Image 1 (cartoon, helix red, strand yellow):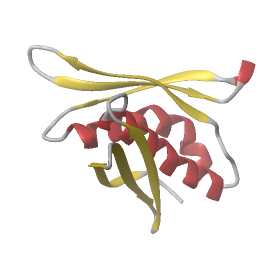
Image 2 (image 1 turned 180 degrees about the vertical axis):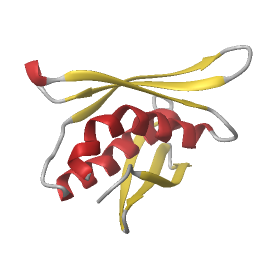
Image 3 (image 1 turned 90 degrees about the horizontal axis):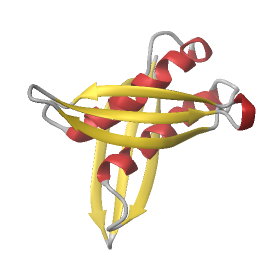
Length: 132
């Protein structure tokens, strides 16, 4: 496989007091879906989408013969006079081997796509060698 993961679809819906997110990623003809959910009112679409993106990425790493433990540490939407940006902080690995990663994406028309792109921004650099 070559290149980075491509974000194909993102959705988040409310059903029975739960948020359910679905993220579809693809690369070189291979596609994986990440799913996640959270209970209202604690969960937000952005956090559930971020977790679904992590879950989809995990499928690619397992397929490549590795399973990197990734946890969403924090997520924030920053508003400046000229733009809104999604910022994510992730932790990859466990114990002393873990490291913090960050990613960001400008919000265009959809916050949901920007959230998934921010997670990919933080992870793609770390996983590029593994996924090639």
